[in-house]
Length: 158
Image (cartoon, rainbow, N blue to C red; front, side, top):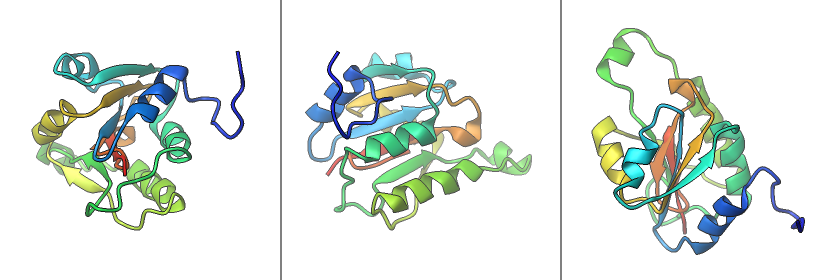
């Protein structure tokens, strides 16, 4: 096995290959364990497994290589909470972590919040969906274009 200099070791060859093939406007979804990854990927996106990794650490590694789309209002998005989540007071502190990671990568916009079923439809059009080991809803990253990120989080590429 060859070690590539400057490439985060936690990025699998499969994920690196997907990132290398993404083009302008392509999106990648970083999904939590409860996201319907296999079902969504039957509609077209490539399914990539990263079961032992959390979304924040994977996001940070991906952003070392993937340029974010600067031509959209927000290159990263998360799945919006459902009304019942708000009613029970569900907190999403990991969203602040995502924004901090994005800021360190040069992104100054806030995360877009996308309604659940709209998010699923958008994920079906993504280039790839990465199934991570993030278990809690507040860790979920959703969809955006390469260069975009989202809980089942998405990134959008420039």
